Image 1 (cartoon, rainbow, N blue to C red):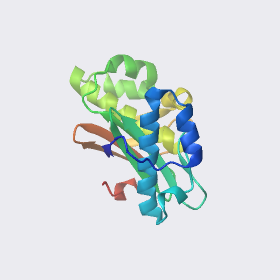
Image 2: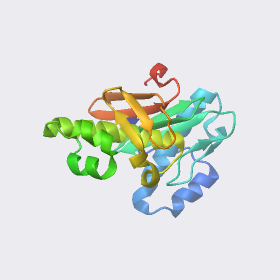
Image 3: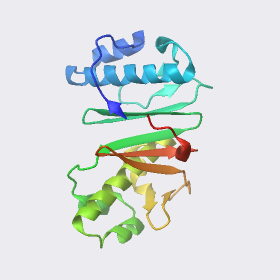
Image 4: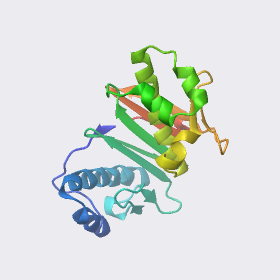
Length: 199
């Protein structure tokens, strides 16, 4: 995780520069900074110059690498950026851990009934933290599966008793890691996430 900072000389491909220019001005800095920082990090991992990283990253779409270069995921919130690379499919999400949240309403509306049954007797602040942690796990899982929040959120269940993430339709049980880092709730989903290096 790192601050999402404006860069004096962002490293963007020509296509990324065009995409950035077509965005509303309020989104240009976030897009430019996140893709430039992603290129810099991937350049180190892949031992390539940043502009030679085979990254396809249109706005509002998940970033993708060319075949045989691994998988990448990113998340940004409130000026922070979380990036991940893996040889296998991976998804990440982050949220400010103190984010105000109507936890009961969110859980009732978006979580499977079995998960709500585990949560409903929790005290208010414990419930808020549990719902937020479940949400970031599920967003990371949706990025891992290359799905959509609208279609997949209700299909993902976090079973706190088993410490297991489960897709109710597909039966997927991907590995999941949740970490609190300097006031941020960060989730990573995919193979070997427990062996990840946080930098």
